[in-house]
Length: 436
Ligand code: UD1
Image (cartoon, rainbow, N blue to C red; front, side):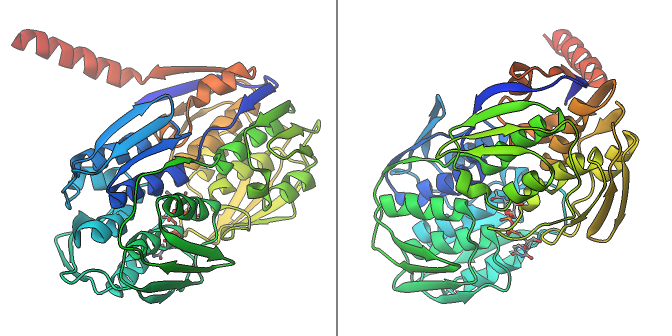
């Protein structure tokens, strides 16, 4: 596993383009299996989660080529319906294949998914919705055998919470089901709309409007080309990296409207934002101001995926910020690491009270999850002295060339393999040469 050594205190300045959205690309790639055609998906970021999804597509029998941020998936001859347990465990979004495989084959054998350790993350909403299509689910030893002998039948689903993944799974199951499906209290995230746009380009009939989604099932879908939307979370991450280092940056290839829940907080914290149709320029203040309250909500509210990152901003802001995590029950694992850097944070349940201090101090910290890792890197960028962030494999799940991009903006970051791993490799190398 790699680690990052960051010499803090460098101001970030410059101009970058935002990568495509991981959370859009993942369900769209799963949808390629449903399509039974050849699809070209452009603007896909090069990430370990994308590689994991490609491995699932290949295990199902698809031909997949990934070149220059374009993934070509040919699923015409694919006949698989089972996802190997080790591939399911790599990431939570593997659950999205359930709707796609059932929609295509009428049978799916999967296991419970993995992903970041940020709470219980059950899949009950996915499973109860899928059952409504006439699917029978048998669970034994963590393996789910899902069958529908007579073809999926459109249905009405009211979600008790607007789960992003469950909404996407229902869309995938419904796209080629017989009859019409309606989802009430559906997730409104831009990634859900992007999936619907892709499927519509393939011949589906999906209409999304204010939390209500209507899907008229079609007999079959055809291949299409699609451009994945820019990653709003990555975009906000770079805005925040600029904010903590008192820099100035122009971020291009973005959709500013997707950050409507974030701009008011950056504004409250004293950042100057100039928003164009596809770009954002940020100029940070000499010292960030507190935000009264940051409360995570489903889209269009403030995203849970930015909670950890804004905790870092609050750590060095002038005043006290209250952060409330409403989406996941266990998403403050970055806090003990930030405390090692001198932060003043108290947590109780889903609330963190962050008393800003003028400067954090460099320390050795460990990544806990994807966005938590990012919060630690940003803390390292603005801290006095050297910060070493361990286990940064989490980071590579969501950010394409993160350290290189930050370096291009003026940061001092070096990536190395962890020492004990080097020793392990030496040992393995020695063993291999002995065997040879
Ligand atoms: C997606 C995003 C993730 C983001 C999250 C919330 C992807 C690949 N990941 O995750 O980055 O943090 O949306 O914006 O798109 N829940 C249940 N039962 C279920 C499903 C969800 O109780 O069957 C709960 C979860 O435990 C969580 C909440 O609902 O507390 C939100 O989860 P959900 O919207 O489903 O998130 P994901 O789709 O997993």
